[in-house]
Length: 226
Length: 79
Image (cartoon, rainbow over the protein chains, first blue to last red):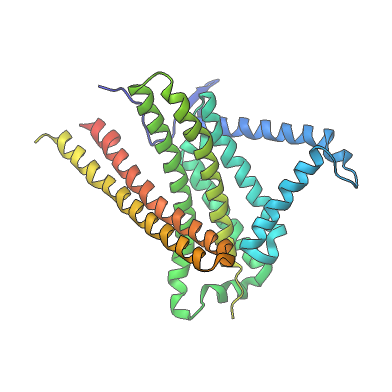
């Protein structure tokens, strides 16, 4: 009998007598490291930007520009407003899932974390839409082509964040379960090769998919009504 | 048959949806390749809408896998 450790419930740890969610600790440590890295990057590189880019500045500008042009293809005119949020989602989802490679439990294996991410994207979609099209424009956008579809569109918009959250959670959970099964059956060599897919490439794909879904929903919400 | 056997069969039936998702993905990809062959200049647009469709299909497959995993590990552990 293979002994597997699979649970869909969030795990808790007791630290200094306080019961804390495991995913929260992982996520906040990752965020702390990311912010630290950003501060170092700011003082070492961004403050010394020159008119003629060279070295790391080239890489950073290329990354920002390519993300912005990618966002522009999805959401059109409000790319400058939306792209930073997309990048935040990318960094958060990627690094909180990527920690699995160091043997830590990924924060996105907790359904609270992923549904919270989905709700953040829901808020952002509506804020962007209202900011660029106004409340009237948002309502008109929801009731195109005719007023009959209004309830259906509202329902679809309200389900989207949960669908995003659950799909991310399920993908990460399933990846972990498959890795555990492989470890249990073949404990030598094979897990290393498959881990390259499940802990690096799979994480990248899920991150890309999350950002793409966020941008697509935003693009749908800011679409100009005829 | 024991309860565990029923749970195993239920998990297997739930995982069948993964096959359906695979078939639908193959159909979508085949049609997009067709469309790109016919109109190579529209490759970018076709690719992006294909990606969105593939994500939706993949979500279905993952939901099915999640249901079957829940059946095995949550319901199976309770027996």
